[in-house]
Picture (cartoon, rainbow, N blue to C red):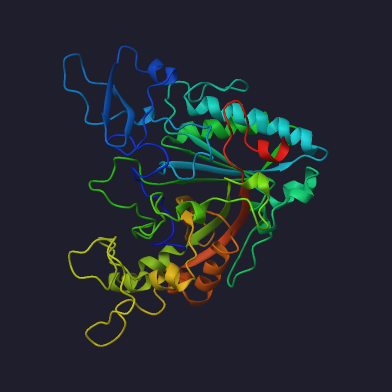
Length: 437
């Protein structure tokens, strides 16, 4: 869960939103904000299988050749819909994560007003329009850059807002896992927001606006920034890599799979509250990688810890020329009769087949925040996993990983959070409307 099987949401035309042209972004036209910075530019519109209104800005001189792909800033993802944006969409290059705590006495009405304000802002920013209040012009000359804002509710929110009877049973605190070293000040919180974009300034701008709009109602508890590979940066089609150099996210569930929705989104019934139908649960973990120790290992040892070749991501059980998507043969043996994929290899311990079919949609980002006091890197993974029920997703898998995964020797879990992610907002509505009315 912590590495090769655990993060990047696959860039796929099977996404719930239509895939865009080269670069993997759904394109839905060019916004006014994008055009402000490209006066006189021509507009090129393409169409094809799985492409809906893919747009590109022509930045070439008059009469010159058109660029090979669309402008990165022109990608636009709708805020309104059945599910919140930022879950199934192709992963963006940058993320701002933050949690807020409600001020005393805010109550249900104050929470409703804040979520209405945030939802209006998120809808405007997602199409490249300025915020309707507290706009600071930081991203004025940028396009929407595939911006998404995803909101979640922590367990502590419900008592503070007078909604204790609506708190989901699955929002119970995560258990303690061996070797956890969690800092409460960098996890949990009443309200959570995931802000993703292909431009760091666009994401930071959105967070700053939300923070100012929340003044007096909710205060920032913690904040983390992360990054992934920029769309179009890779020289070939390949899943992204993490800071250990491993291809990361190969076995993520795909939206085209028959049981995808059942793994990721909540359905009414059982002990799931009706207001959360169409929503999800998000587990956040800040996982520091012990990179000095990891990089001291020879390549073959690194590959045995993971269970995959580092060059192409193929499992160690696969023949030369295989790819990262070649199924791992957990029974395969090497020439000496030992397991080709070691017993404590990450891919073996994390495999759904070894965990009762438990699966999550991982959407992690790397972080690098300088050096610690001992000179080691403060760097690793901002682990994000969406699932229909953490009691049958994250918790049993992490319990097994913490006890038998060889990769755990190179990781430290330093912050954690669990949030109920409401369904998407309808046109004219707001996130959390099914709960707050």
